[in-house]
Length: 95
Image (spheres, rainbow, N blue to C red):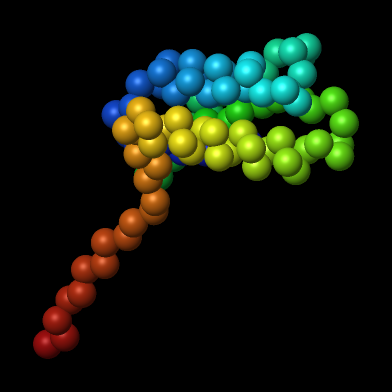
């Protein structure tokens, strides 16, 4: 699961927050341990990957949605913004 947060956010804070969510979820396997990787410094966000395993495929969709909602709510509660791409367009007046 990939997600991004605004530049200036402490990487370790995000990782700790998401690991806590994954460790508490009833469907996330404890072995292998879930991980949260700081994957890239993107164009408009610091990008992370939450890596975790679910024991059966039939739980996958519900678990992913539940975890996405929990991550989103935790980031909002911590006042960590989830940025969106923006573009600046400069217009040049024709002569």
